[in-house]
Length: 92
Image (cartoon, rainbow, N blue to C red; front, top):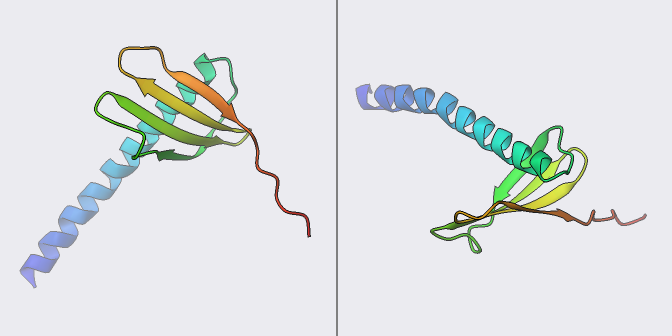
């Protein structure tokens, strides 16, 4: 019983830290997109491409309210931001 309680306490303490890290990550991605001359008022979703990322290279797919972007951080180089085509929803 005591072990379960301690596990719940640790889990409850970790949840705000994860949310804060996610918020910081989204703010960084949004700022990178805007500094490239593109618009991103709010990051709706961000997903790291684990297969294409490596030790000194990180690739993100970011969905903003306005558009989707591919954001590449490659070593000491300036970040690369590529707007992605919107996918059309199939007509019914």
